[in-house]
Image (cartoon, rainbow, N blue to C red; front, top):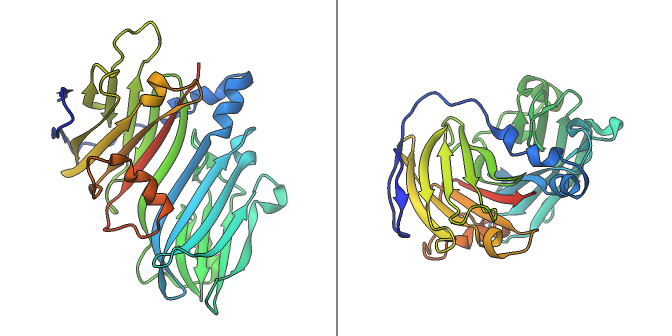
Length: 313
């Protein structure tokens, strides 16, 4: 079922709880396989940041993990940065940067001091056998672990047994909670991403399709979740910003969009989309999404997916 959007009010659309479709994320990276300027632009903008709520040295923190790919083979050009920020003061507690395209750095560890605390943080990683898809983050065959005072703070990847054996750390009393994800995707008119809107929910395929070329006098924005069209925005030149509510697994998800850059900006402009399970305090100002990553005091236990969509010709 799909509704045309005629105003900025809410319309609820239910997504059936069917088996997840196969990934279409490869489309999102297709723009990066070009040549010349388009290729370098796609590579430079290939970046994913995930924000977690966790506890570090006995206090709440916001833990961000950023994966980047700057060009070349994915397995050789991926880098990861881990930053911990105090959730109350906003002060940075520690930062670790890993550049595993150097062969000696694909597996290893770093020990860091925690600012303002008599504690050490150890970051362990093994990306020697990591396998990558279209996104800059690996899909399997890896782990990244953050350990403080002998307890696991954050563990990413599918090699969990290997990680616990290497770190000799205890499992956390409470798992780190993913609260936000920000992606930069590059394509011509179809942009793909994945999102898990609840902590124990399944992963959903999101596809955003929009043609704003000169041949299309009335560009239209269509969003699919798990191959089901859930939202269509016509007369996009007049409705370049807006919001709508859809239901995913029975959970209301607010969708915000801003395609002003595509329609009226420069060739290097991006459109921004946000899928949020808990509403921003000021619904009329949806671009409060910037505060999600600038301020560590993320309220509630909702989830936000932010997509910066870059067009290439």
